[in-house]
Length: 117
Image (cartoon, rainbow, N blue to C red; front, side, top):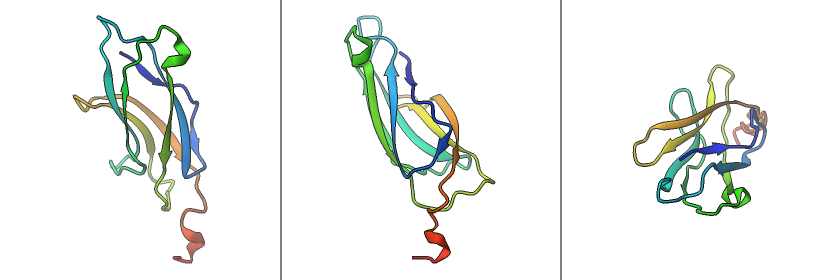
């Protein structure tokens, strides 16, 4: 089963994100449901958002019924240009990475303007 990001995201400019995903095929006797862990992380493996656990289990033949919007909250911290950041989609059972999309973290005001508030 394929579960793909359909939102075109290259740059993160807000601490709250809504991303759309699509389950390519309906669940059937041949196509089994699959559960995915979806999160943002740094190239050092630091998880920088909430992690969404989603089970793609729609058996609807209507493609619109197999779309889902998932919400992510990015950690409030300073993001340096010396690191790379990724949206990762992992298979829950195996931990295998099924999708990785590099994003630019463009959040200039997440460090409290340098006042340490």
